[in-house]
Image (cartoon, rainbow, N blue to C red):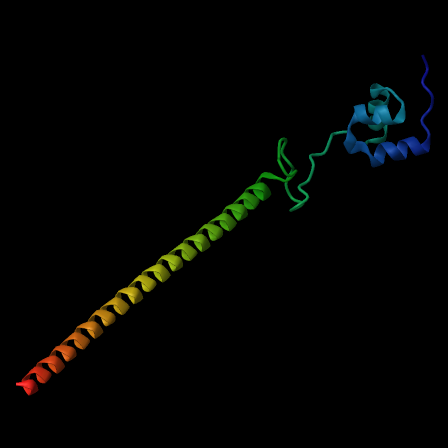
Length: 141
């Protein structure tokens, strides 16, 4: 079976989209995989699928199974940033808890001092009343 001839639009499309691979191009152009490979060879077009480039850094190829579609270094940097944020949040919570504990301890100290002042004031008032009563009894005699 003789195939239909290639036109310039198909060859331009083949050249522009070569990274998609022979099977995908064959499907899009309505030609056989072998026909696409043959024409690419004739025109010196590589059909090798290029490794996807990391959208974050543009340097490394993206590995399969990447959660974000990033290269491994970018993914690790992202997780490091997430962990640093969690650490900062944890440390802030610890500072808040410590500040609350200090405030509770200060409140407790203030209450204890107030109780001591009241006890001293009552004791002084009792002594003064006792002295007044003793003075009143001495005068009565």
